[in-house]
Length: 200
Image 1 (cartoon, rainbow, N blue to C red):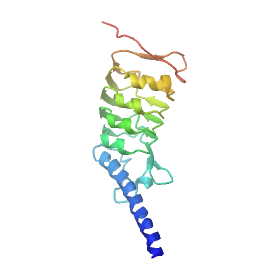
Image 2 (tube, one colour):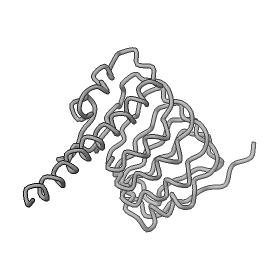
Image 3 (cartoon, helix red, strand yellow):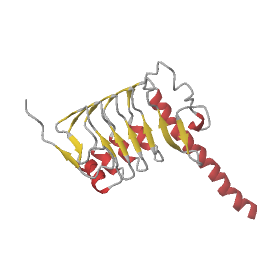
Image 4 (cartoon, rainbow, N blue to C red):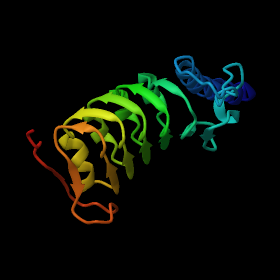
């Protein structure tokens, strides 16, 4: 009887771990199907593999959970998908220098372990989701050189004032105001000032 008591939790544990890994693979592969990838940088993203940790441009932790997506200057186009918000261990989302279009999904605000969000030099439109203000671990948010509009949410600005956010770059967009740091370095920003829109 004792051997059965020990064996059951082991079987349950073994069944849980692959499910998590396969779930993250499903999320990433689902995103891949919505992207145009002329250089085939995502060719290794094969959902039949045990987990996505062997895929190029993906980094995992010791528990085989995805912690980094590195697709900077990859030549891809298409949208960001809401399902990315389900990668709850993600720390780095690096998708800069592509032709990513559409809006920033509000579900990105669920990635509470995120340290770096780099979406600059794309074709993103719409506003910055207020939910990004939930990213209390974030140190770098670089959204410059897109086509974003609206205003900077107060919750995002508060990440600079009371959080750990060190770099917030939203320049070269279509916001109704401009944002500048109170020092000239662009780093270790402690206060953000949003200027009123200049009338033509």
